[in-house]
Length: 291
Length: 74
Image (cartoon, rainbow over all chains, first blue to last red; front, side, top):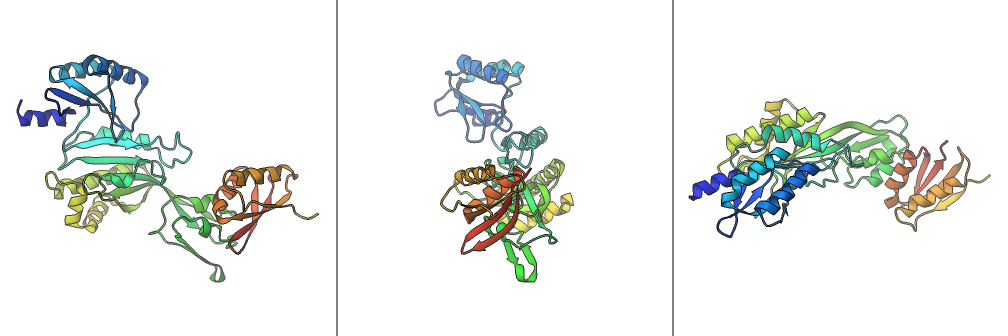
C-alpha cells in the first residue's frame, strides 16, 4: 500500500496505527450523542473486527482501534444498517462538538445539538486547507471550550440597563465577574462595557428591581482557535446573533475566508496571523451583512 | 414589630440560601426579613429569592457587607 493510499484511507476515517496492518476506525458522531442501537452495533463491531476495545477521543468522537486492513470494508458494512457511519480525518471539517444545550442543561442559552446537527449536515467531511474544528457551547460556562476551535460558538446573553426604577443598589456591579459594569449613582448613570462583558447574564438574574434586562440572547462566534503544538485562542467576531441560521451563515463566511486565504496544511489561526484579524471581520461582515 | 434580622456573612453556598429560606419560613406572606450577606453570596441568594417568588426591596451596603430587605412572596 502506498503513502497516497494511506492518506486516502485516513481522510475516510481509517487511521493507520503504529503497528503495521492495523487501523483505528473513526466513527461519525455529532455532539457526542449516540443512540443505544448505535452503541450496541459499535460494541459488536469492536468485538468482531477489533480487540473488543473502544476509544473515546478528545473531541467526543468514537474510534474502534486494532482493525486489520482486510476487515476495513467489512466493519463499514456491518455498522451502516445501525446508522453508524465511518468518520473523517485529514484536511476536512471535523467532528462538530456540542454540549447538551438548553433543552437539557439548566444553564443552557442555545440549543447546541440542534446547531451541531445543522453544521454537521452542511459541512462534515468537506475539504479545507487544513483540519477545521467547530465546537458549540450552550452558554458562557463554555464546557465545549469554544475558543479552542477554528470556529467556536457560545450561547450568550447581552444585558441592557433601563433606568426608570433603578435604585443604584450596586448588586449588578458587585456580581459582574469581569467588572464590566460601572455605576455612578450621583449622575444616575450605569455603563456596561461591551468589550469586557462575557454574556453570563449574572447582572440580570441578580438585579432586585428588574431594571437589568436581556437585550439579546443568542449565538456568539469565536474564530481562529486551535490547540496542538502552538495553541492559540479564538477571538470574538460579530455581535450576538439571534438565530441558528445567522450562526450558520457566519460559519460559512469564515470558511470562505479560510478557503480563499489559507495555505495547505496551515491551521486557520495561523492564516489569521498572516492576514490579520480585521481582514476576517471585514470579510464576514461584508459576506453575511450581520452586525 | 421590628423586622427580623438574619446574618449569613459567615456562611457559604448553599447554606446561605438555606438559612434565608428558613428565615422566610418563619414569617407570614408579605412579611419582611433583613439579610446581611457578603458580596460572594449576592448572586445566588438574590436569584434564588426571585425564582421562589420573593422580592428584594431595598439594598444597602456597609463596608463590603450588603443588607437586603426581603419581602416574602405569596
